[in-house]
Amino acid sequence: MLRMTTYVGFLRAINLGATRKFPKEAIVAATEAAGFSEVATHINTGNVRLGTRMRSRARIESALEQAYRHDRGFEVPTIVYTAAELRAIADDADRFAHGHDGKHYIWLLKDEPSASLRAELEGLSAGQERVRLSPRAVHLLLDGGYLDATLLKPIEKQIGVATNRNVTVVRALVQKWC
Image 1 (cartoon, rainbow, N blue to C red):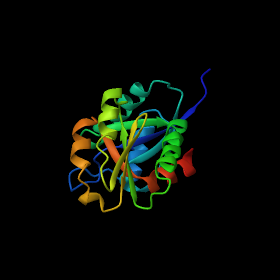
Image 2: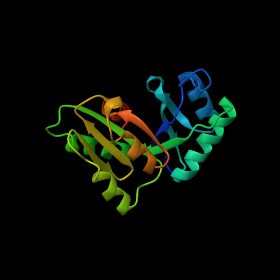
Image 3: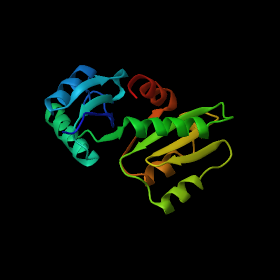
Image 4: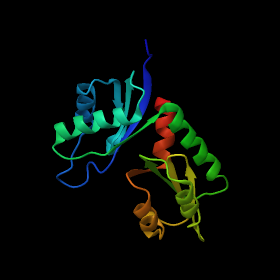
């Protein structure tokens, strides 16, 4: 019998404006209704821990997206990592930010970028903005403000389905759930 594995899911584009509300309690209820256990949320930005015996990330993401669409009436792209994968992203964040005192944001990716895209994205680094990649994450290190970053649009155009969190949230999730 397969043992239960902990996953961390990231919901994209929720709680933005009046029509995309998805409170934490509703996320928990919809996730449990989809058959997942050990469900918990962290802050109201779409971070959910769940347990399952399923091993296919694609099947887990699909089941969650169907449940969320059914519950909310709108699409909720969902990106799932094992606890070990998320811990590795946080470890990369610590390594990439060594000696950097600015802001650090992480796009969590549904799909791993190709080698050529990885090289292209990392090649965007310039001046006060640095780009580094983990297997399914893009790290953006800034000295200035997020909305002032010139690399946001070029990166977002190329990375596919993704959601963004600041490094503080990622580290808190690893400490709390991994």
